[in-house]
Length: 248
Image (cartoon, rainbow, N blue to C red; front, side):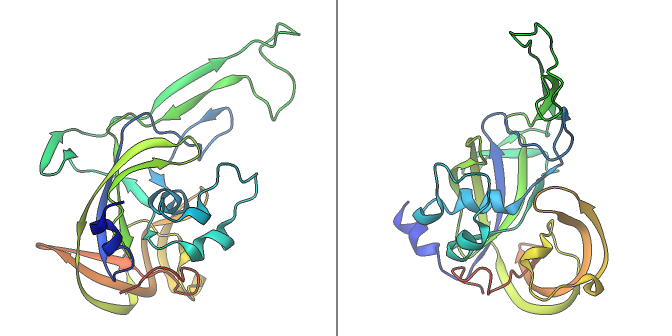
């Protein structure tokens, strides 16, 4: 990590980020045999990837039980959930753009034969041998916001350690506010302090891990940020949950 990046980690800052997949990106969020993905990346996977400089949270093997309660307080950069970008170009280098529109999910089919029975089925529902798995194509990209540090650079995302690159731009923070707001990003409501059902006026639920709210109108603390003529509203994460993030 460069000295510039080290200096930015821990500073009160918010960045708008673009994540570009450099390989087929896949993770299962919906389905059993015919699996597919939503257009959203959960922010816990993102935070493990962008906090690559925090050694205690990087594990080669951790079993099947998540260590969120132990790991999240150690992370210095908070990331919101990411959503598929609708922009018509992707950055391939600083100040260089490639015209590109995100491709539909592609599928890999599998139809394996059991060598003992010479059948494609075993009869065990939890071990299907016929199905399809969805993947995002290389260069498909996602947008999210990061708080507390600049996550730009190459990362390895998810259990499959897919290579991705993050480009970022620092936002101008105008103020912190509290009240009803429509965040400019998908929301992991578990990350927000003191938000209950009565604080959610409207939202769409994305059933994945963790569950996400999109197009949400909810009452919470948030930051009003600017980049040129554009205004962004970024929900403030719970300070008690993210103790190592330098919040503006």
